[in-house]
Amino acid sequence: MKKESRGKDAGIWLRLLGFALIPLAVQSLQPAVGSSLGILTPLPLAYGMARRGYLEGTGAVALVALITSLTLGSPQGLYFFLETLPLTVGIGWTARSRAPLYQSVVLAIGIVVLTAAAAVGVYSVTTGTPLAQVYQQTVQQMGTFMNTVTQNAKLNQQQQQEMLWTLNLWKRFFVGIWVSTLTLLVLFYALVTRGWLLTAGVIKKDGLALLTRWKLPFPFVGGFVVLAVMVLLTHGLAREIALNCLLPLGTFYGIQGIVIAGHMFTRWSMPPIFRTLVLLFGIMAIPITTMVTMSLTGLFDTWIDFRRRWPIEKTPPPASA
Image (cartoon, rainbow, N blue to C red; front, top):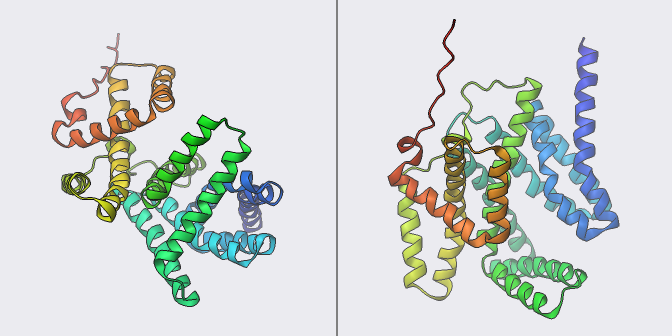
C-alpha cells in the first residue's frame, strides 16, 4: 500500500511538474510566447503545494528554478524562485482559507510584495545600484518587451500610437497594475486549486471561505476616500503614488462588484450563457467603464448592502403527496 501510495504521489508530481515546465520549454524556442505562458506556471505548483504540503511544494519550485537556471541562466532561475515560491504559498493558503477571502488575498499579496521588495533591496545593496535606478531598469525591461510585441504585431500607425500611449501609461502605474494583476491571479488560481482539491477529496467544503461572501469592511472605505482626495488635490509624485495605491484597492472593490452582479443575476434567474455574454461584452466593448462600474458597485455596497437588501429567494421544496 505504501509503495502504491508513493507511486501515485510521484505520478501526481510528474504531471504537475510537466505542466509547470511547458512555458520554459516554449520560452527556449519562442521567448515572447514562453514569457506570456509563464503566468500559468504557479498554478500546478500551487496545487501540488496545497495537496502535498509546503516542504514538497518548495522542493518542486526549487527544481523548476534549477532547470530554469540550467536553461536560461542563474539570474533567471533565482528570479523565478523568488517570484514563484511566495506566490504558490499564497495561492495554496488562500485555496484552503477558512477566514474571509479578502483577508487571505491581502496576506498572500503582502507576502509576494515583501519578498519582491526584499529581493530588490538585496540586489541594490550587493550591486551598489540605487533603488530608484533598479525600479527604472525593471520598468525599462518590461517596456522593451512590450515594444517588441507591438512591433511584431504589425500594427498600423494609429494603432502603434495607441499602444505607445498605453505603454507610457503602464510605465507610470507599473506598481499598481502589478499588484492588481497579482490580486486577480491569486484569487482566480486559489479558486481553481480549491476546485481541484475538492474534486480529489483532499479537503471538505464545510467551513471554507466563499467568494459569494466577499465583502470589504468599512475601514477600507476610509483608505479609498483618502487616496481619492490625494488624486484630486495633489500633483506630481504624490498623485502618482496615490493612483498606484488606488488601483489595487479598486480591484478589491471590483471583485466585490462582480460578486454582487453574480448575486443579482441569480436573483433574476439569468441563464449562465447570458451572464457570460453580458460580462464579456462589458469587458471587451467598454472595459474601462465596466471596471469602474464594478468598483463603484463594490464601494457603494458598503452602505447599500445589495445582497441583504435583495436576497435570493429560495424555492420551497415540492409538497409530498
